[in-house]
View 1: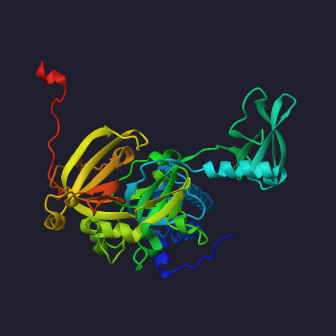
View 2 (view 1 turned 45 degrees about the horizontal axis):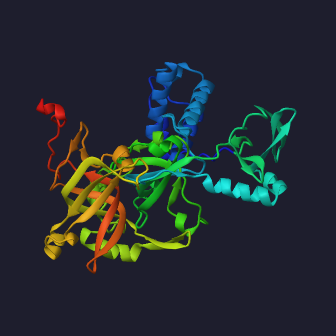
Length: 447
């Protein structure tokens, strides 16, 4: 259904924009305006994008020389290209622009379809016909030397002989079954995903009180290993959680495959006067904007108030909250060490302190907060360097940094000592001491 179009004074001004010797036709302006409204962009920008597009793709420098229906078709093509992310990504249905910044990445990838496979096995074992009728499960059947796939839309002969394993299949009740996509075709039984932590809000709500929060951005496939710029203002398309989502998933944003290619690093989603507030040392620490910042000296209290308990295999555990904090580096180890807890088997570390901690605890263990950095954070972000437009600048001890991570507590001599499992580090080039790097560290230097 075509959206109702009502021309405003501003749009009339854009319509009068001279593009050589004439104006754009009403049909083109209508489509540009609808797209601008839907994506929350200024019409002027969309018009300019359209003119650049037809000049680049169709060598059209003067639209007045072209037929109106051709200009309209070009506008239609532009929308299709943009909605599917001309940069190479795809946009999931129901997605809206979210703005803010990345603050961290989870340490591990996880299979997003493991639960679907378990459910399919259970449902097929209990009632094969009901499982197939649901449209979620397909059943492979041997027929005339080939595998056939039975779904709720009927049975189709595949190109796989019975002496080979049918694609994307797994066993349930001694039968071969598979998960089905909405198209009715088999889909892979596994899909790696990683949560990226994003501090922000939907673009339309960003400046509203109480709208900014810490989200888990679910990135799947190749996006699960996407490199991101921690602390850099940006925009990304994501689908908000369903209002009926379980309590533990109300902060999860869904994305389409290739979503990392749609990330736009920009601060133009707020007016020029507000952009200085997006600087991480303001944005991460401002208690009026959100409640996720905790000073180093308050981490034990943050753990007590924000931790949750869980049970796995009959054993109870406790998980601390994810917080944003700030401190001065007094030790760091940029060389990897073996770690049996890391998905790639290596870890890094730094230690934070502050005058408040040292005033309270002197040289005791409680004066330092140990920060453990995994391979994902090291590889997908730049935890040991400050980023500038031109370079990455390694920092040294006594640099001030921001950290996003999950708080843990260990008890020693009756005292609770916090630590952080780091997801992201932001360093500002004006708040660091530069680390000297380089030189030959191998045995050959002594030859």
